[in-house]
Image 1 (cartoon, rainbow, N blue to C red):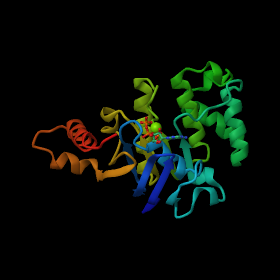
Image 2 (cartoon, protein in one colour):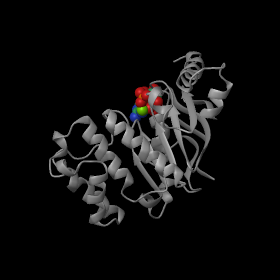
Image 3 (spheres, rainbow, N blue to C red):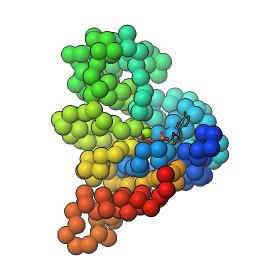
Image 4 (cartoon, rainbow, N blue to C red):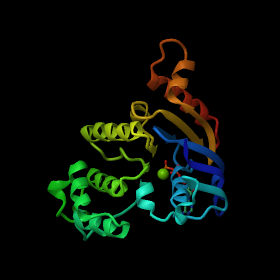
Length: 243
Ligand SMILES: Nc1ncnc2c1ncn2[C@@H]1O[C@H](COP(=O)(O)OP(=O)(O)OP(=O)(O)O)[C@@H](O)[C@H]1O
Ligand SMILES: [Mg+2]
């Protein structure tokens, strides 16, 4: 089943074409990794998908519907984008409660989530005093508020400690195994290789490949480890794209 569908999605900023006729279907029941160099257009793609910016061309839909037309978006899609910020003067708990109320989610869910992301002991501290990893955990809690079918995370392991990375990997795997759609962007190939089922590589706004990780490994020379197969493919593809 396809749950995220991009068709000829295009976004320009002045003379820069950030996303260039991107067509992509992201399947349910899998973790998909969105990879690409800095300025490839990953965050811009996710922002269009979430209705935060308007495409110049093409469409982005979740479950066949544009995000801004979803009746209760939090229960279908949860997202944590690069740079999504909480008000620094609010506590983590308050931040979560405000968003929960807006999404029609009960307060009790906030405490459950603070526990899940291991922020309970810092829940009553101001977000302004949170470390990078703590802010990342809070953003994850926000993404999971509505127990969504589709989870979209921009560089979620950024700032997480090794235990946090493993915990996140297990969480995403569990969600995919329960049939959910998980789309994550990342630069950490060594991490991605342990987390994703499908690999998408983009550069200069264009799609370069979309394949199961197992196929990349299968097609590599005998004895190539999955991490090396992914790295070789990624560097070969992105090395030829002019910035
Ligand atoms: N609001 C904006 N105004 C002007 N240009 C923008 C804006 N947002 C993105 N861009 C440009 O669009 C291109 C793609 O940026 P984007 O943030 O989508 O890349 P990315 O793949 O997420 O990169 P990174 O790996 O560094 O996060 C870049 O050239 C960037 O400068
Ligand atoms: Mg980005």
